[in-house]
Length: 102
Image 1 (cartoon, rainbow, N blue to C red):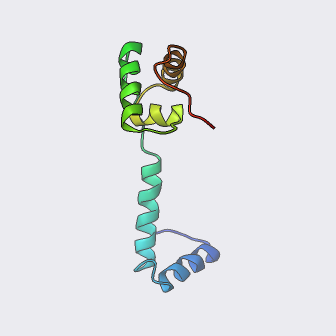
Image 2 (cartoon, helix red, strand yellow):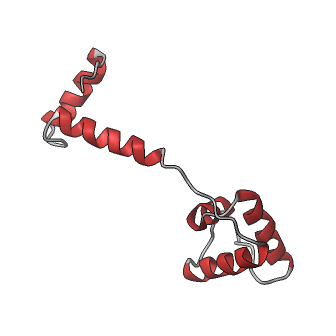
C-alpha cells in the first residue's frame, strides 16, 4: 500500500525513527493505523431492562470504587446512555448509590 505524505509529516516521522522511538517509518505507520482502527471500533449496546441495568451499575460501582462518569459506566457495560443516566438518577434518589464529592 503506497501512502503519500507531506514533506513536513515525513520529516517528523523520520525524526521519531532517528530518535529510536520506531524501528522504521513502516513501523510508525503500522502503529498509527492500529491506533486509528482501535479508536473507531464499533460499540455495541445491550438491550437491557432497567432492573438488570440497576444491578449491573451497582456491581460496576462496587468493583470500581471512586468517582465514575455515567458515560464511562455506559461504555464499560455496553449500556445505552439514556438508560444509564436514568438508572443512575433513580439509584441516587433511592440512596442506593452516592454522588461523588467534587
